[in-house]
Image 1: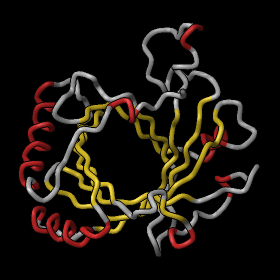
Image 2 (image 1 turned 120 degrees about the vertical axis):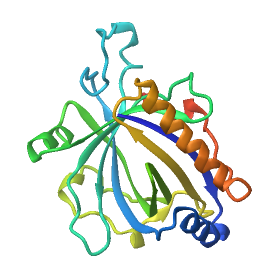
Image 3 (image 1 turned 90 degrees about the vertical axis):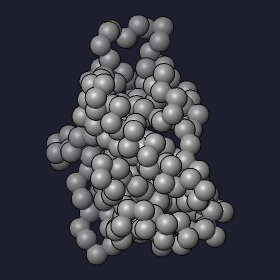
Image 4 (image 1 turned 90 degrees about the horizontal axis):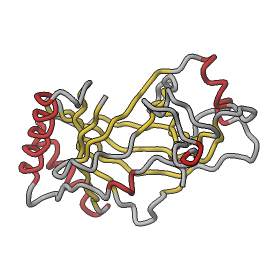
Length: 229
């Protein structure tokens, strides 16, 4: 799957204003979302997860290790969703007007979660955070206005075996309270020019609708590098 996206930062003082703008542009009301995200570091290369087509050369083995994520929904009043594994490639350097990158998402069965336990030799737990905010949908465009909250984990604990943390007990990663606005279109195969062009056109059209209110941009692609450094 390919994700085409644009981003912006929204100050906490403009939160309600931007919410109202998004509600007007999409002609819909926001849906509250909350997700628990666990970040893991690969301990050895995985050709399936990394989607490599060629054998990994020993000299490059460290650069081929990735950070991957386990994500599940934790909306208030609902049972937590199933864990899904998310991997992200380095954004395409050729894409200039939007961010374009290959991603994979897969729902995991209980047996597949064993590779993320503390005793695993494949992945090492790094950190946990919570994404909290709202989502809009406009045609094929998914709009998320969210903030990240840090939640500590006791040393040596099996994070998969404890209840999901509550936002109320977590701390903002950005003390200023700034929100991240992500506008994204997903397509199954970004190599098909018609699908790719349609996704980019839809994002650019949405960007124009927000001109003067929110400045959507393409971040530095290296800041989105998923590889271990």
